[in-house]
Image (cartoon, rainbow, N blue to C red):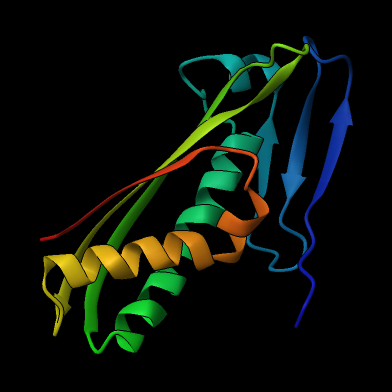
Length: 145
């Protein structure tokens, strides 16, 4: 299996500095990062590690769920997945991820609501990104459209 690479160039202090995150493997783009924008309610055109984790988790979960639906005998017509990744203070100092909320709405043939929920729970447990983030509470809201 392949290894994927991203690179960050950072200049300055935490509060006054900024950087650029490059998606090196895919060459899909370079994105601005800064701590003040990371900690603010509005991102102001910058991304953050939490947003990048949310993107990775939502994509991974969608792929895993499509496989788990098929394994359960269903056919995924469409899946809409969002991941909300929260950052907060760590009681030991600094910051930590305080939770991840996955939400999926799906159009699936061949599975009822209970079968879809079972497949979604399996995807939450089986997705490689979920496995990597076991130190963070991950919640799931799954429903058919």
